[in-house]
Image (cartoon, rainbow, N blue to C red):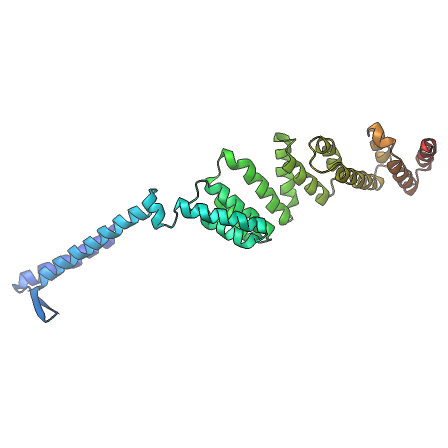
Amino acid sequence: MIKLLIIFLVLVGGFFVGPLIQGHQGSATFLVANYAITMSFNTFLILQIIFLLVLYMIYWLLRKLFYSKTAFGNWLRSKSPRKAAKRIEQAQLLLLEGNYQQAGKLFSQGAKGAHNKTLAYLLAAQAQIDNNQLISANQLLEQAAKSCGTKELFAFQLVQIRLQIKNNQYAIARTNIDKLLADKPRNPEVLKLADQIYYEIGDYQAVIDILPIMYKTNVYSESQLDQFKSVAYIKRMKQLSIDSNPDALAKWWLAQPKEIRKNAIYQKAMASYFEQMGNTAEAEKMQLQIAKNKP
């Protein structure tokens, strides 16, 4: 930059010094509305430089105003808090109406002038996730990360995990949800996401482990949770039945609560899996237990 400035000054100096040395400065004539304006060439150059300096000063002033955090600067950048609030309000309506694509755009536009940029970007990202626009959602999440504070961190983590689930990134989603479960074990949204991830990766024991707290916090209706429990237990039995350790299923069964071991549906499933494994002794014990429970 300094070299360019030196070259520029040398060239300008040449324009001035050359004519002065020869004793003839030359002249410049301009015709404006039938008026002839004549001046020396050096005077023309001086006025030209002054004009350029004035233009630069105007540019510098406007740039300062444009990037200032004042109300006028926000207005110049179309970051008026009032405009942002209107866009976000309209985006919320569109979100409720199911127009996720347009809602995401308005949330993103409103974020530039919003009081809480992170929240606006997170809402935009969530709308794009719901619309399966995952690339756009990831970009918006990156924008949210730039201004994310402690207050918005939990919401950011939830949106991030939802995006990871959509992208089938279950390994990293599992790591992140386990951390959230350790911090917020009774949060309904954390429990829902954990349940979804565990089912997707086939970790039915993890599903079983969080079922008690899901019942206590009423994450789903009791009938829905009963269905989830039945699926999780039956699938866990199947997993253990093909385990290399033939005693794994029996040991697991004995470790379950009494209400599970006395349930006729689970008893029948256990008897069936014991028979498939060739463990006839345990299968017969289970059949006797089923017979005793019959009225």
